[in-house]
Amino acid sequence: MAESGTGFLDQLKSCIVWSWTYFWTVWFFVMLFLVYILRVPLKINDNLTTASGPAMFGTESSLSMFLNTLTPKFYVALTGTSSLISGLILIFEWWYFRKYGTSFIEQVSVSHLRPLLGGVDNSTPSNSNSSNGDSDSNRQSVSECKVWRNPLNLFRGAEYNRYTWVTGREPLTYYDMNLSAQDHQTFFTCDTDHLRPADAIMQKAWRERNPQARISAAHEALELDDCATAYILLAEEEATTIVEAEKLFKQALKAGEGCYRRSQQLQHHGAQYEAQHRRDTNVLVYIKRRLAMCARKLGRTREAVKMMRDLMKEFPLLSMFNIHENLLEALLELQAYADVQAVLAKYDDISLPKSATICYTAALLKARAVSDKFSPEAASRRGLSTAEMNAVEAIHRAVEFNPHVPKYLLEMKSLILPPEHILKRGDSEAIAYAFFHLQHWKRVEGALNLLHCTWEGTFRMIPYPLEKGHLFYPYPICTETADRELLPLFHEVSVYPKKELPFFILFTAGLCSFTAMLALLTHQFPELMGVFAKAFLSTLFAPLNFIMEKVENILPSSLWHQLTRI
Image 1 (tube, rainbow, N blue to C red):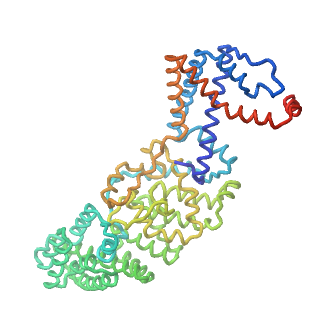
Image 2 (tube, helix red, strand yellow):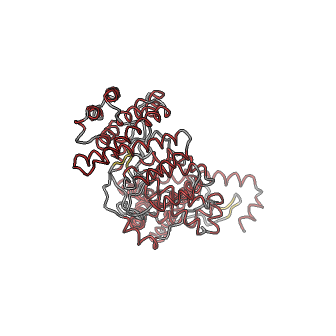
Image 3 (cartoon, rainbow, N blue to C red):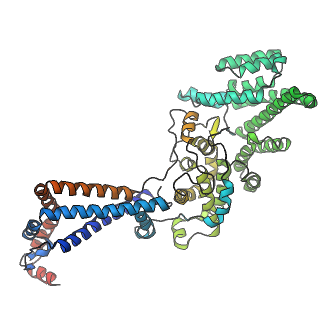
């Protein structure tokens, strides 16, 4: 990855300058070495200054005489020695890259050459010594590709279906919808459903693949009884607006509370009653959470925050729904940053599974303290302050957890509707986070600028190879496959930005291979390659000769003679 705080033009200038410097340095020393070892007789005109100018500047006769003295043996030795030197540099570059994860030449370029060219390097490595103690405890043995329910998933009827009507594209994949069907069967059904006709119908409805069949089954269940899960299905899939969905959820809440109170009284009377009570609890929590989300979407944010807080107090053990992530987003909308920090202090713990919402929200709060006055040029001159260092470290931590998010926040990649399920640390989670939180980053002045200047520096800090980790357990290698199942076909899945081979290793390898091929051809066809070499050098120096001739014609001979003597 490119170093942080540098643009494409800085990298391009650095690559061009270093490439030409490296190329001509190698060839100069090779020529000097061979001229000394092989004692090549350079029979250049003894008279260095003539009326028309010095021969040392490459006049036609001196250049021709010089080229005629070079034997095929010289060309073979020249290309062979150049290939050897390039090969040695390639071996050293590869060893340095394998050990430190970056190119030696590129590292020197970043440290010394780029500031001279006007580039800025703002990335400051985080204090690895202070984080080493926590890194081991953070590497938890978790299921690498476990798929989670998206805490902020949209409504199918009011949002996903409307997108399909407008664009003709399906925002949800079959795999994603199948996972949702499995979730519905897990949370909204139990073994005693066959004892109640309405619940028995809904048990079959959740297994239906056809949306119209599910909706028809829900209406059929409501004709038999006031069924909470039937209202849920209609609110999710039949309602075409959030207002209609909220109305249906309120009816579901009334029915769900009645079922919950009845099952609560019987929950200790047997395993079947216990299962029914667990199902009714899940239904009630789901309804209240979706009602809070409806209030948030309809602009009643404070009401949504109160509903979420009450729900978390009433059911503190149901962390599987990740209601705190809904709460964080609503509090950010209210710009209640102190309350956001209080929620993070409770849930940003190493014993809990991390999420992009937690990591990037923590980074946003720390960036907010310094982003309005942050300047890459000033930071490069005076160094980072303690607050800026904390913000940069928080951004590095967030980017290491999910490296796909910055491109969406910086609008380097287009957003789509988030799926109903996400993969932690994957592209699907990045889309789900950026879809709802991009506005919060834009609201904080300078936050996106700070992110832009520092996020790429994360990849220079992570140990190489990528099987290792830094602050978190190693990045799973299976995320790309899972994300392709979760995300629609028209979306280009973001792949983990792996550490690619630096430009200078590729350049050195190409130069080594090219010169080795030249050495082989020169050895096999010395006369022919000698002709080609002379023609190449003549062509190379032709512009210089042309310029010198023009200068000689323009300047007076006396003045040219005085300049030559100087």
